[in-house]
Length: 277
Ligand code: NAP
Image (cartoon, rainbow, N blue to C red; front, side, top):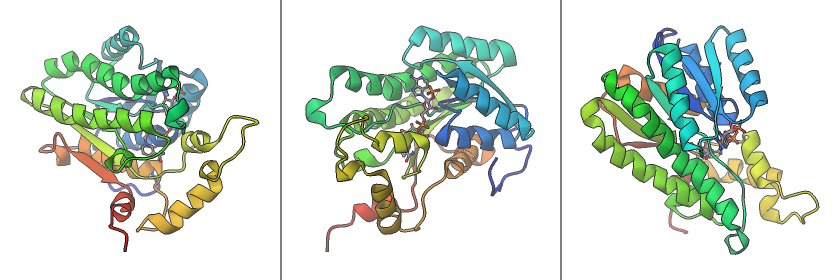
């Protein structure tokens, strides 16, 4: 649950959200924030141990949560998931596309499989899930979709060709679907988080066992230098920072916002974009 709640506790009461990758890291911050505001949150990902732990933690804190096992790369399963959630709750008010595959790898040796896997989770998965909830949102007269993007593709980011390409696609999808589905009252936005030291990020920086550890992979060194030197607001982001932004976009305060991508990063990317002095 967020340590800094700014919204009314029942702001989203009676509504239902699906959060992909919603049981760990940033996704869990989003799921917890939405549950705190009264939403029933369905967390959707592959690993039962992640899902079970997250459902327990949210329900123990008084929130409403359940889970559904899904690999977002499997379109048939994604379609079935949307139906299961709709059958169980009678509505789907919000989809958060947050699942992603994260690892650092030099492009010259990136395997076809690794490339395909990240593009399929981040980009295809986002499209499959968004398309799967569309009929339900259309039938109920509206809905909201928020996708977790990133800022690294604004300037290029070595060793992340796969993820930056996928997230650039997510940004494009956000704008295009926002226009295509506005007539149905469906608002589609994205959030681009700055560096948030989740377990996923720590793992992405860690080389395989036995491999040499180049400086770029030194988790603590890389993270410490970013936080101190590159974030104007001088702190890491937290999963709750992103959760609060999702809550805003899901709330009536976001009623006139669609096709937008919100950077939530303590000013990190803008500072990096400054011309060198
Ligand atoms: P994370 O903890 O590794 O989250 C990834 C989540 O995606 C996990 O819950 C994982 O759950 C799920 N997932 C992975 N593959 C999946 C698949 N095929 N099908 C369904 N679910 C799958 O990483 P995070 O740092 O919280 O990142 C969350 C999002 O924020 C990602 O979209 C990431 O690109 C974005 N982001 C993060 C940062 C950052 O600094 N942390 C910055 C910018 C953007 P299972 O293992 O249970 O499937």
